[in-house]
Length: 233
Image 1 (cartoon, helix red, strand yellow):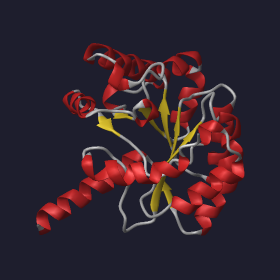
Image 2 (cartoon, rainbow, N blue to C red):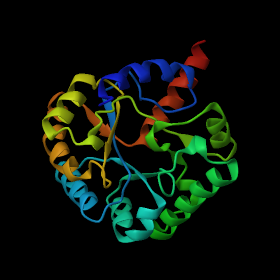
Image 3 (cartoon, rainbow, N blue to C red):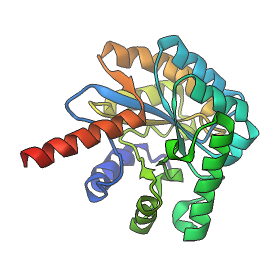
Image 4 (cartoon, helix red, strand yellow):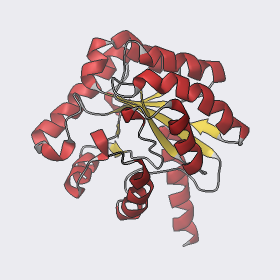
């Protein structure tokens, strides 16, 4: 059973309950973030990078440590092309099923792999998206203790089951709004179609007036908005 119709409902329920996660950006600006999970993949990720280059679009990639170690050159290309990189765990194991020790290990292993591939410091790789979006309050508490930033999503077109480019595009266009955080996949599940999807999706979103930014920029917007609320409140 495809879960795509449920994701908007899940988002509306979870987003206000877990405000320490980044679910979306500013509702008052047309800045949106295009993100990719489960890579890098030796074939699909370079295709994605080529499309992003064509339109001069910054994106954010949540990488698996095992894939980074298999394709360090492609990981470096993501960084060299100006995209943002975050953590998705080492091997896509569900975070709530891991002990605190194993959770910390999977994050640190992935962080180290990215640092080695891209010549970055650990402090530059702090964003974490849990595999399958699964987390618990305890998971989030550990993230904050370890100085990681949890990143979720607001638009999930379920591209990993490969419903077709037209369907994925339709789902995104129906749900996108100011501040949307869109998740697609450049890994083994869904990556076959992702370059073709963004090739038709990006021009339509640009035509609607949306500006593409990285996850880090959305965090900056959220911080500014919180400061303004505190000042005016």
